[in-house]
Structures are given as C-alpha cells and as structure tokens.
Image (cartoon, rainbow, N blue to C red; front, side, top):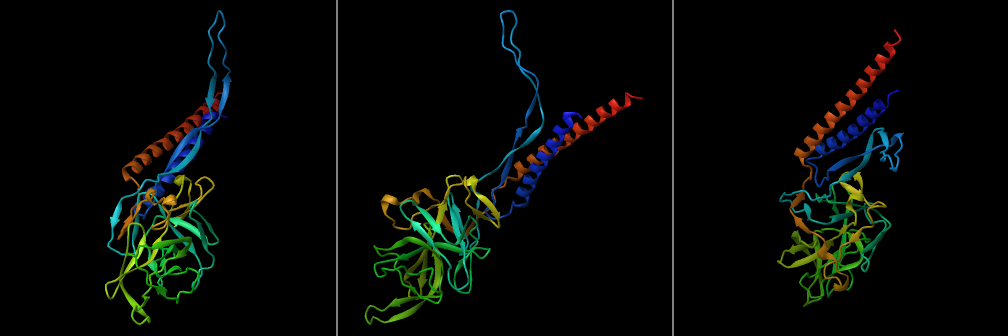
Length: 344
C-alpha cells in the first residue's frame, strides 16, 4: 500500500482538528471573556530510504534520503491576551483590566462548608472547597445577598476591618442572618483580613453604634460601588460609607496551562502552577504584590478576544489543506488501480 495514502489520512485528521478549533473560536466570538485557541502541527516519523555517508578522499559525502509519513497535531495553544472591555452600566458587572482572575467556590445554601486559608507571605492558598477561576465578571445576588457568578458559584474575597472592629466585618463561615458591622474605609487602620478568603456578600443593612448612647441600630444600604482594587463600599442613608469586603484576584505563572472546564471557568493544572493571590488592601508593604495585577472595572465586561478575520483565514487554509490531502488519497487510489490493470 502506498505511504502517501496514510500521509493523506493523517493530514485529513490534523486539519479536521484545526477546523474543530476554528469552529469553536467562531462560535464563541460573542462569549464573555472567551480566549481563542490555535493549532500547531508537527511532522510525523520518517522512513530512512538511504543513510548518509561521510566524505572521503575521492568522493564527497551524501545526505540521508528520508520519506515523511504524515502530520500530527503538536499543540492547541490558548491566546490569553485580554479582550476588549464593553461598558454595560450594570453595577454587578466587573471586568479585569489586564492581569488577574476572579476566585469562585462552591458551597451549600446556608453556610459555607469548608474554607480557603491564605498564606499572605507566599500568596498561596489552601482550600477545602471546590475552587475555580474565571474572568467572566457577570455577577448576581441570591436572596441572602451573596455575590455569585452566572453558574451559582460564590465570589470569594477578603473580609475587611478598621480600628473599631478587631474582627472581620463578616465571617464567611457564619450564617447569613449574621449582621455586618460598620467598617470605615477612611479609617487609618482600615485593612483586609488576609488570613482567609470568605464568601462576599452585599447585605440590606449594616450595624452601627451610636457614639453618644452606645446603642446599636441597623442602617440601610442605598447603593454600592466596587473600587479598582476590588474593595466593595456601600453608601448608607446618612451619606456615610462602609466597606463590605474586597474581591480576591489570582494570577498564574503559565496562564496557557490552565484547564478549561467550560462555562467560562478554569482550574489550575500541573503546568499552570499554583494560583498566586493578590495582596489585600493596605497589606504589609514587604509582601504587597498588588501592583502586579490589573484593575477591576465596575459596570463593564471583557469581550471575547476572537479575531474573526484571522479565524476565517485559518478556516480557508484548513479547508484547502483538507481538500489537498483528500486529493492525495484519490491519486494514490488511481495509482493502485493502474497497478491492478497491469495484470489484464
């Protein structure tokens, strides 16, 4: 049997895989925060027809004569470049400008089962929850006020505290009927609690203490905003501001090594490296890495980075290569037919 036919078959398979990738890129050209992929090929093994020979006194050397046996897919690479930012005007839509991923986790309805412990010196985390990562910031709220992504996973972040609150304003392992404490973001001692990540929540009200009487009362929240560093602040009825938490972000040494799970979510792999957490607000300067991360933009979403012009070009090239490989097979078939006819 002619080797060219098998080479043609390998070309059909390789270009079919390329068309699969191109089709997925085009289908997701409107998907939030989608990252397009590309295929690279490699030549397969070679059959030695004649070995090389070294030069002698009377005769020069000869090169080896080899015949290739086809092509195979070398790798499918993900383009991690940022897509364009699209304003939406929706306060729960967040986009990451440049480097970083949101941290989302899964837990039961009334309490967070498990925890994410943070080492603020190495910026690593140890999680007993199902923890995933995403750049899709189309978030929403549930009836308890928990901040969720589109698939119902909880958005994780740091609790915050000020001089009046030695404990975090909200403990993610507490029940959701627990009250938030008032935390002044303008306090000189305002900072994030970097000991662990908690489920972020935007409540209806916070507890404030009257400095004159010492009585505690609930103050309704009128609106909220998310700063570039991820700090969620709310405006109360009297115009004062309170901090509710800080959205956590992570990065990876090799973003292309992340495992794509669908639904705009990723998990770390053996080649992506462990997630590196962004330092909390007003962290220890010796361990602060926050400047290496991008800003969080409220009221916007990151669009797909698919280049349709490039995808259509790749589709034409793959289609023509597919046709050419098919022609190799039909030509090989014609040669075999001629060999059979020699017997007549």
